[in-house]
Length: 77
Image 1 (cartoon, rainbow, N blue to C red):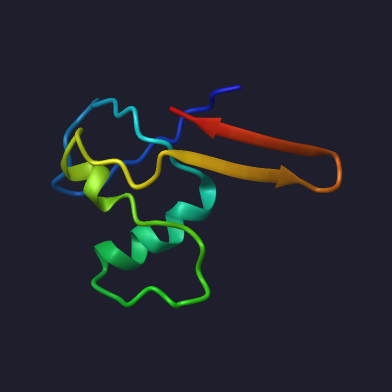
Image 2: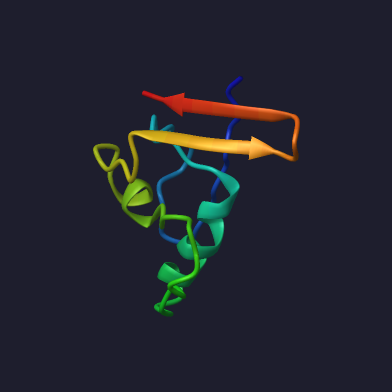
C-alpha cells in the first residue's frame, strides 16, 4: 500500500512529486533540520530536507515497519 506524505514549506517548490521513501517518524528530524536545531541521537527518522531540495536525493532505499502486534511490512524501491 502506498500513501502520500505531503509537505509544504516556505521557499519550497509547488506541486512537486518525489519518489523518495518517507514515513511519519521522518517529520520530526525534518522540522529540526529546517529550524537549524540538532536532531537528538535517539531519533530514528531521517530528515527529508534533501528530498525537498532535490528530486535526486533519497535518504533510504527501504523501510521496515510494524503496526502493533498485527502487521509487519517492508517497503523498498
